[in-house]
Image (cartoon, rainbow, N blue to C red; front, side, top):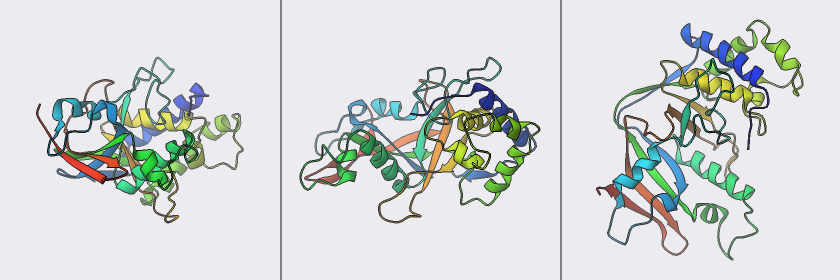
Length: 265
């Protein structure tokens, strides 16, 4: 799990990105009303309904609330800043395309011991999703988010502008990284999220509502089939406004994927 190894790098990144946000030099993406996004979490938080039933809308509300903020959960772009001048922020981690979700779930499944614990004939995706629920979330209105996906040509220019901030590369040169390591590689480092957390908190404390970035998890089907993660920022333990859960899907090795509507209670 990534940690903030260098609070000084976090603050320097935060300051540099905040300037670029204020001058409208950060690439953005407009998400439209009725657009769907996806999120997975342990099914114990939203138990599978009986056949013909529905998932509880009241319980599904937990799918819309960040679990971090002031609490450190070792998430890349959200959590505490370790600097009194920078407010913490919670992050709701979703995906814009379902393949990104599958890639992420498989990655963490492997870290948890798959495929050693898989049943005979079970796929890695099936085993990784066996104890998860995947919810389809619908946007009730437009959202403007930062877009640092590799699909956006402005992202490369944005990273270059960060590196050109006075003293920034000199500071990074005094870290564990080689001077040849790109800012993107620093942002997706698996152990140190100092750069990524600085980027995320700068976005969270601006007029932007979230951050879109390509998942670094590889697909077993195609090298370029990755998809984009979406982090929506909000307050720890409180649902991010402007969203509702429409469907909940559960994976069953015998029945396949079972999808249920979400309704009250």
